Length: 266
Image (cartoon, rainbow, N blue to C red; front, side):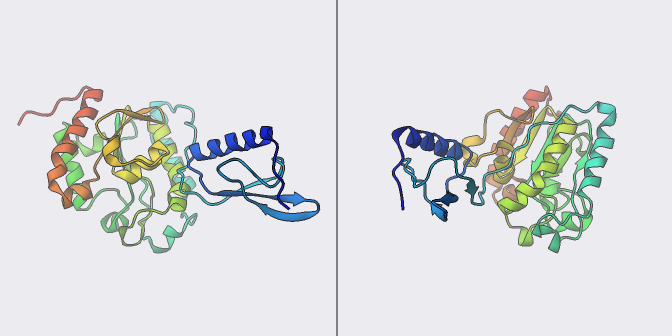
């Protein structure tokens, strides 16, 4: 039978609910043993529950991104080796369902000591075939964007939230992104870029640990894992809507200002 909790317990439950909501967890239930019988106990938004708070808490799966604390800094001379070690840890990965359709793991590409890092969503067909990020049409546009900043592709580092191609280039599922992104976080912690440019909403979501409309995130500096984070459109989106290239260039200029770069003279 359901038992109304005391005001003090209700207050504690309400605070607990607020904590979970801050983490992006909105649906959960509590299960435990009451009077010798197992019960499923609903906790309402108002803070009432049908069992004492000492029971074990079981969470349903949630799309909330998983963020890990930054690891210790890596000396510049060791960064390439540290990235190689991360790749070895990944191995012939079968940690999520994406491995079933992949041809190659797309780990990352570029300078291990880069000041600037670009992070996209996931590999496409060309990337899956070659094992390198951003080598298709969207990659060609990204190369042009990098060149417009006065840099070469081999001076930056490029990676994705997931390292295996999602079927039909769909958005990675939360369990796929949460399984794979810790390896990306380790890459960021090794490279220690001054600026990260998130390409698209999926990259922004998992780097920030929360989902927001892209329009609300662009045009200002965020922070992720000790780096300044700037959010812009994914090159694939710019291919579909070239009118937004001007807005993307404004975002890149924000990154350039943080890095003290000037666009090359035409």
